[in-house]
Length: 320
Image 1: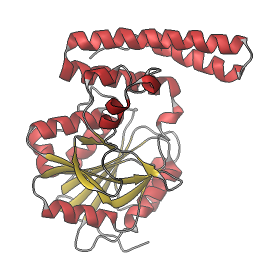
Image 2 (image 1 turned 30 degrees about the vertical axis):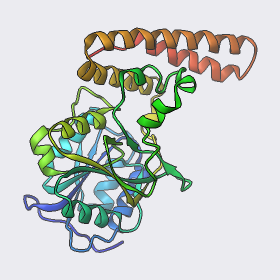
Image 3 (image 1 turned 90 degrees about the vertical axis):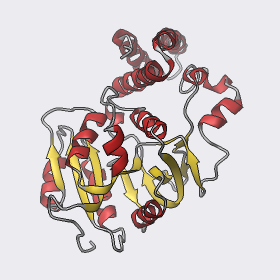
């Protein structure tokens, strides 16, 4: 492990890395090791781990093996947005890096991102090139969704949506190794300038998880900051290991976050229409899965999905 590079509490650092963790001790350990192995050059570092009431050995592991980390264990699972805000309030860095625990830094990615931000004062938020576990590119650059996109993205209608609608949202015209202005970058690895946080505040904790980074980038861009996809620095994101532990809640959080964003930026009526569409879609999927189950096609899988979709419908998918 490289020599530790961190500052005393209260002293302004160059970079504060905030990691919100829930029951992923082994992945969190690999993440922290990758950070401390990443050459930082002249930059100083602090790491803040906000543990959202893990029941594995995450807290003890960090305390024992990474005593230099600022560990903030919570007594209950507060959700991704609220925990990040706890970390943001504790951070002292000129730059703040929101980083998932199931990620690993590749090479000198941190130093590259900081140098770019130092050289481009109008850039408020930056997202690196992200790799899947197998080394393929994970798409993390986006444009803001249109109202129409809300009815097709991650629903049964997506395969039938106009290609141009999806290509625009997923910014497929931007190369994986490009450096380009975008509307938003995914929150698995999101670097922000402290001035952005000071100006627009933290994440909207009305989003338990999902869409919170899109909302934050929207507010930053509205306030005049640029958001940049930075293809010159790599991280690995193993993907969704915390949310995989609660399948039904994952569906509910995703759809309710979509509804909250729609309500905030497209209006109450649009959100209510989208809510009714989504609930109807889950009913339709229950019918489809029930038919496949009766026909004997992967029956246990079909029953599991039916139970998940019923939980989503029973939640009502509230609009907040």
